[in-house]
Image (cartoon, rainbow, N blue to C red; front, top):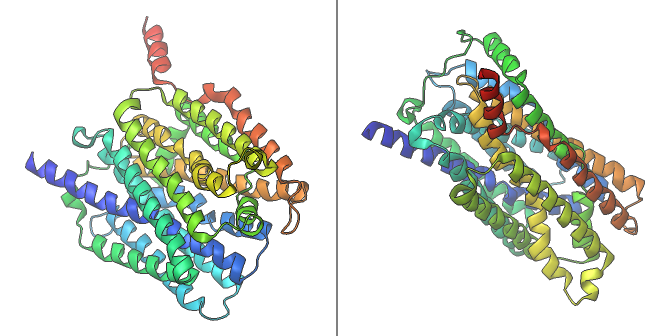
Length: 434
């Protein structure tokens, strides 16, 4: 009993710190956005292109998941990958911090941002696999996904709050240095943790093999299950079909409305606080609610917020006496994080459906599909911005672009039956038995 309790505490420490650091990534990325616009003078479309292209390593998560399931280092197959990913992030951000002092090129910056996200994706795959594995134990039941969600949100809150202050007080380059040192600390801390002390369940391939080929076969078999494949397809489509205009909104807020870095940082903090509260609310009152109902409700809420952004750009709230800064502070940050609210109930659903031995591979595939959907969404946003002729100097078509975005958010609600409902599944099984 004490051994299980000690393992549970160590899991919470490892994952709590790990997810906190990953949430804190908003700190250097806020600095990167300002560095790109203020120092390198990129336009809205180029900014959004770089933001989304930097996430390309996230698409390869299934590969990292299969490898982490099958390839062990010194008898461990989760902790070493966390340490390796943290080291990659430390090297990348520290390199950017020192290169930013000279005339760094967009190409060099893009390379290190890609390398950083490669490290982040490896860490996330290993962390998600531990959550899925430990989540099958009674000692770390459904509360663990909510716990790591809240740890990540807390990191996001502090990262964005301190990011705005650091940029305004020092420079955007200071955020690169601080996060690089934090990632280095995560690397050193992780090196001192032995995987056996976590008391994770034995990871055996369902097909009986232990190699990469066996795990690829297992993943392929799992993805052929309708309850899993259709649910993942809906999650991906509900994001990929929406052409987001994040780069354009960033330019509109900072260049047209002259919102400063500290206020923008606090706006993101508001969004992260909303994520934290969502984790608490879900853990206390909504764990037994159907994931399908929750996810559909969140999608509908996103549509309402996008329409609100449309009214904001049209100046409706300004005419009603609401200052632009107040809207940006309390609404914009929440909308930015609302797209991620769906991930919590969906991750819990996938954890329940995932067969033992495929946790790393399946969760990596899920996160990869979501990451790819966000990239596609960002690229479609660039196309939409070009179509409505939004540039650095002209934002007249911005409202029209937001109207298109709102319509695209609503469309996936027609297909919510794709999301697996456990009660419906149980009823179908009972009918077949009869």
